[in-house]
Length: 141
Image (cartoon, rainbow, N blue to C red):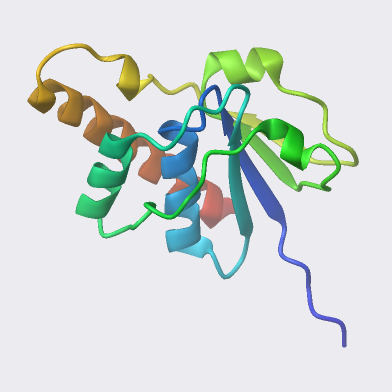
């Protein structure tokens, strides 16, 4: 009997620096045995160090994840495309084949100005929102 192919899930945001990276880390952690998980950006700008820090607080190491351009996935048959910011939703390319498209409008924690503590708080809040969304997604698939 042929092995079942795991559905591919692609999280998209503008910079592939924080929200989509955290979503990739959460889904790999929660249901990585059931999904092939990727993230990319419309204009990738590298992994945000605070995203790495707050995910580490949750016991998930995303430090080896790379910021990727969405172009890398244009020929890939993706089962789910999940945009995590409005800019990515507006500029999301069309992928080949049938796929499920979802949008999770999440605040950009990297846009928060203020003290280190205020920035950390913003990243933690978005991290926890993403965890809830990912648990809901994984539980329904």
